[in-house]
Image (cartoon, rainbow, N blue to C red; front, side, top):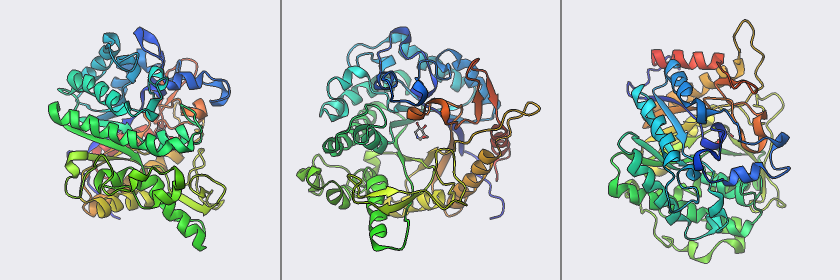
Length: 453
Ligand code: IFM
């Protein structure tokens, strides 16, 4: 591909989430989240790490906004900690918590940086978990009420809203594998947790339609699923995993029903009423997608190489490592930029020409120490370049892609991996919390400045 010029209004940003960067999770009257609890439970997070300190963004937010501006970013995706705003998850608003986000948004807008606000990036108030969390049929209403507080406070300055980040991750690693908060192993709960997350998205969108003036969408983790071998069992496994990860949430939102494979995957645990078409309550039917979402946020990291494995519940399949010579990140994820182009084209092909944002894309590597003041994270530079090219290829083919958010602005708390996995364009010193942009940050700034790749 020769050079590609991105559209003039293309948004260039970086993404973060509250628990991963803020620190001080209980400050100023905030209520504890399920992540606070989980991280403080022995053995749940590598090295006993917690988000108590994280990147100290709760105190250093102004410095971080200045950093975004220095790096030339035109947009910033962050999340709100529900429990800072509503310490019990419902009821009384904690003004000091809300004010933190007001100040952040004001500072972004002042610098000409477009805020994209995620309402839920995994940190459910612990008080709501005590009521069953996402298993409770009231959870969509809790979420919509919380969302309404934010809409009223910030919609005049926030033009892009994301309801839920990666509902699949909330459902499976959170409620089935027990790897992420709330750390449950309850296979039978998963279909309803997922359903409630979808209803929560819809309830927030409905509230937004009544009062909001901008755009609201959802961010999903997507990855092409390829069979690990030519064996029929692996091919079928890849198809199941495609339904499980890529279509479980998008099909009901944009096509009106769950993928047919879901009943096969969950067997008796799949509720009978979900097999109705449309399920109850109704999702969109073709052509009405604008009712259910204004855009899709794509979180893309890698592809899945899938092998049939009957003992793995519920899928009967697992993801396997690529061949030894293939580049991988320290998360063990294959570097596979072609999958980003394929994902963007697939979205248009399956769901129609709706606006898309790459809401997350990035890689963890073990960066070399600074030499002559420069952290030369060459692998991340390559990853960034190749994925921006991949995005450009989709744009060239007419995909309505409106922005790119690198994951992540800062090295941060990578959930159950603690601080061991580093995704940042900017290094954060674990002792002093000093920020040092890596070479990838300056390469990104150069791309933003010239507008082509
Ligand atoms: O750090 C996470 C983020 O919170 C959600 N998407 C994937 C990232 C990397 O694992």
